[in-house]
Length: 154
Image 1 (spheres, rainbow, N blue to C red):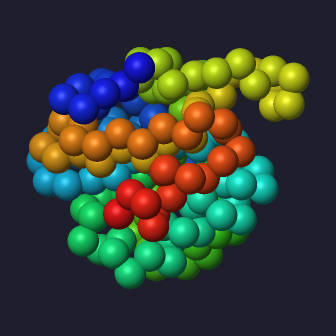
Image 2 (cartoon, rainbow, N blue to C red; image 1 turned 180 degrees about the horizontal axis):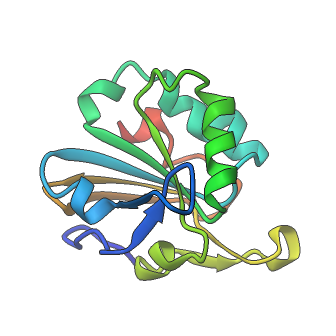
């Protein structure tokens, strides 16, 4: 499982379309950043509590680049980002990990087949500095937001 000192996986994610690749290892190679992993776009905990806490945080601008990563396709994450941050004024970027390769590289996948139809990412927040993990907060339960929320993490 991902831990402090690890480097960001060199895995392509997708933003808005399957044609638009984003590599977080490159995006966060220098400076500060936060990667927030969620089990499912549009799910209650993700849409009502977890991600809105980041979007509304007054500490968002001091945290560096912020990315929300979900095991969904790029069209879903685009629609979800627009639903939560219609004018993209927060600067938070919503990325798709459609096959779960990024999540698998960090060993944060769990079997959500009964509820969501496939393996999904655990809920987490990871702070990075110059491409390296400096803080890891992973929820014990997928529906909980106790250690990975903006109030606890930023």
